[in-house]
Amino acid sequence: MNLSIVGKQLELTEAIKTHVENGINSLNKYNLDIISTRVVLFADENSGKNSFNAEFAINLAHKNTIVIKQNNKDLYVAIDLAIERAKKVLRRHHDKITNHKIKNIAVAKTEVFDNEDEVVPTRLDSYKPIEIEDALNELKESNKNFFVFIDMDDKMRTIYKKTDNTYGLY
Image 1 (cartoon, rainbow, N blue to C red):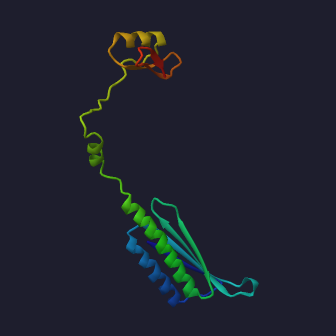
Image 2 (cartoon, rainbow, N blue to C red; image 1 turned 120 degrees about the vertical axis):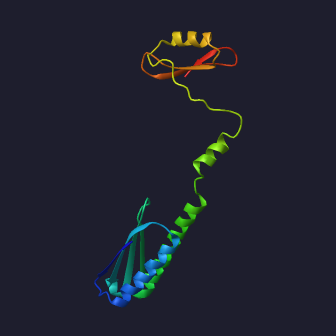
Image 3 (tube, helix red, strand yellow; image 1 turned 90 degrees about the vertical axis):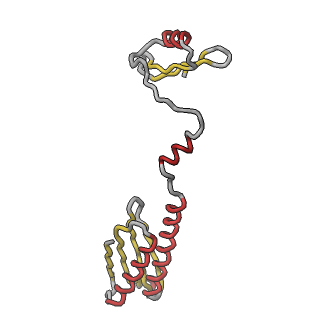
């Protein structure tokens, strides 16, 4: 994991860097693929209030970037609150992944096709366009319930037998 710590309008001491690194390393317990983390710490002196902002941008593989902004009068408290919020977001994402895993495809296939019905793939007999009347005659001559064909406008169509011995076209 790449870690970038930037200080704007304040001096980054080794103690601050160590505090941030320890907090970021605690995020690895969720076993998510964290690609990089960018931490921007800056002092905000607007309107006479002295406060510090901590902004975390966490890049995860196969997920959008998580951005967390925290403001407090104490820099260490702002960092700690931002890390707690990051832990909460990553924990939710981890729980979502572990609780909603897709079953093995072989297991899923046996569950779906466990009954006696069997799906048999078939190819279209004709890829040439035919008239709707010819398709109707072919359906009448066969013992099938439907017939899939390509009509003269190059559209894939289906003609089918209804239960009242009439025919429908889709």
